[in-house]
Length: 412
Image (cartoon, rainbow, N blue to C red):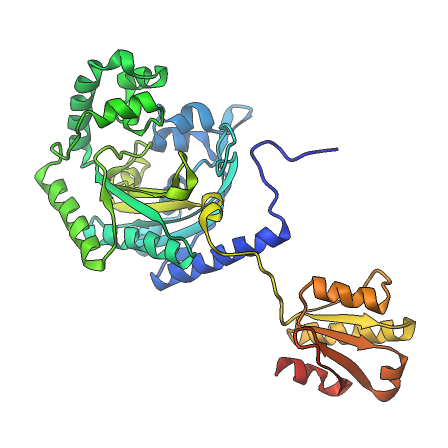
């Protein structure tokens, strides 16, 4: 017997209902903010992620699915931002409208150890805005993520924010961090000892207890921010306060990708244990230019759908009150029944029928199992009279309806 690949998941019909609800709600919220959907390839040039995420990033070093084809190397996309920036530049979106708001839904891939809410094929709901450096946009994006979670019946989440400053600020902060952590070298895990040489900022994102304790005792603040970046971050905090969006300032928050600058944020949930992040995002003001485009401020976020499923209160209670289930008695009735459900579907009414030769009792039980709104019964007697028997599965009421009036009756 074949089994699914480790780190992947089958989305069965009942759970797919919740996925559809999450996706529909997300699309509705994004439309309120004037975002347009973009659909991107699952496969990209591997160099795109090496350049945008940073070659020392955990994703690039250990987690990318690489496909080698002769002299070319491709990667299954590990995240959406780099792909969107590539598409923005390649398709000249800046020429049509410099300020662009895009959202996306779809699978991502990372070659990591599967665990609760963390798969090798997982799904993101995300958005990106390219073309502005305005702090008001940071406020909109963070508040959008907050509203989206609330509309998905998710409470108990915490929004953590920080500012990494501009590139000069990041260099200054990195130098200061390297100096402070060099004294703690022996207490760091093996990965962080390597990070100290290549990119000390990544130590702040380490999940191991010994490293988290060392970072906590550093007492980090935003003293490395220049005046402009400090003012930008203050406007973000003031804007969130004005909207009543609750947040915590976390000086240790850096995110694990090289392209982030200025505002970064992470959303965690108390119900997820140690792997508590359900989404994250931030500004990447230099990425568009670094990938070959013009200078352009940009910001975005992504939410992990599998993580959302673990904390949402949306339930898979499928009760299709509009579904009509047809029960036929005899061959002649079956031929007539096929025509009836065809006409119902043509009129936009969901309809199905018994294809397994059940008894009338068994067929009615099936209608109940499907949570159909109505059962439609037709036999020789109904054919002769030009009627059908319609049963309301909720109330139990049963009556005869003229064939010609059936569609009108069901639509009303």
